Length: 290
Image (cartoon, rainbow, N blue to C red; front, side, top):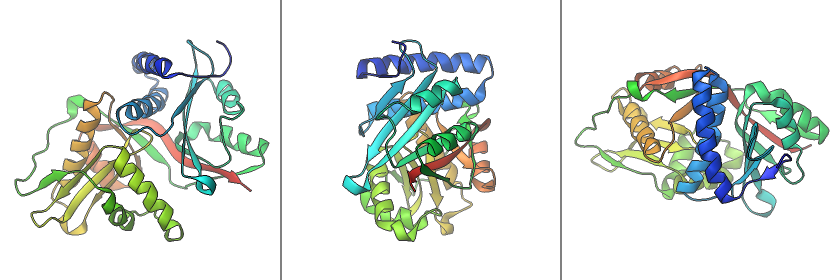
């Protein structure tokens, strides 16, 4: 099949194996930026097969040989529907063509952890559709875990390790630096979805107070690391990040995270845990009607 093709579940399983092969080739050729984009897409597929499905659609430019993969998932109901999109591509022209496949990209789309190097493609795409493309100013570098440098973290005996529950979504939202007060209700619903759908780790004090937490993201990475101020500088951030990365490793994909270059504390935490810069920079783009 040489035209855009939506994969079946069996083909998607085969795609995971093919992407793994691509990954090894990319590492051998030191094409790190391609490799991390690939790992992101592969991680999204694997996590959907292991956790709560969200109607993931997997498109390729051709099959069984391909250069480009686009994943889409739609969340919300009626007027609040939002589509999330992830890409891996070795060919910019094929990516352009695949994005223009009828019914693939909807009206309101968030291109999550989208490689900055492909940003101009989205700008052209938005112009063709007479839509508005916006993006967060922050640019994040993807960090990948080097397992050889990863060391277990000792958990204090008086600390309880558990997971986040949906009722803690309001607390997470209150601590979220990018929260929009005008969109609080929808953002809390989104956090509840993340908490119930993906891996999380939460540490509790002997009194039952939240110490620190981290939440798996839809793009397959670790995210939303937070340590309450009164518990900082005690190593809890590293413990949470280590435990969540271990959860990821156990279900078959390499842990990675996207961290803003100016976030000194988060970068140090990940560096001390064995995460290394990849040279792949991403940001979040949103496509909406004008």
